Length: 83
Image (cartoon, rainbow, N blue to C red):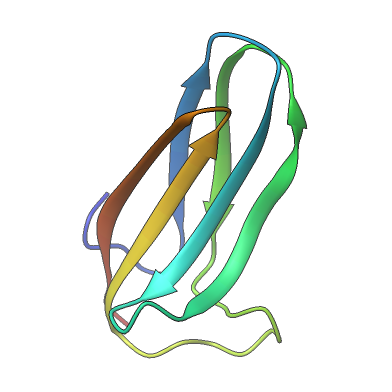
């Protein structure tokens, strides 16, 4: 769901074995947290962002972006956190 509180699921699919990186960025482009960075099997996958940064601190309400990169594919989507 968008907006979300307190967590959101990020769903994606990959057709072949690939290194997958899912990361969350703030509106300034700074990395907030890397959710996944590993080799994954083909299929549909889900990861969760709970609104916390890499240090375990709750982030402020606002607009954030998540990047999904797998092999040569990448996409960036917007999400809104409301606390």
